[in-house]
Length: 43
Picture 1 (cartoon, rainbow, N blue to C red):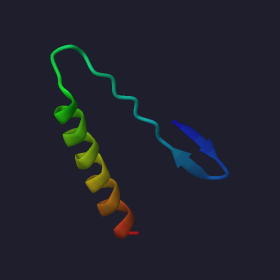
Picture 2: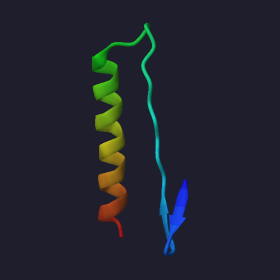
Picture 3: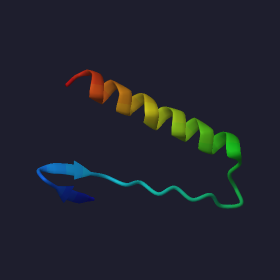
């Protein structure tokens, strides 16, 4: 997390291990995008 000029920036780094496939990563990406879209539309 970093702040600049009163704004906050969160960075999430996701890594893959041998037990997960690319579909799991795409599912996670889509879920996170959906959450971000909901939070920005409520502003």
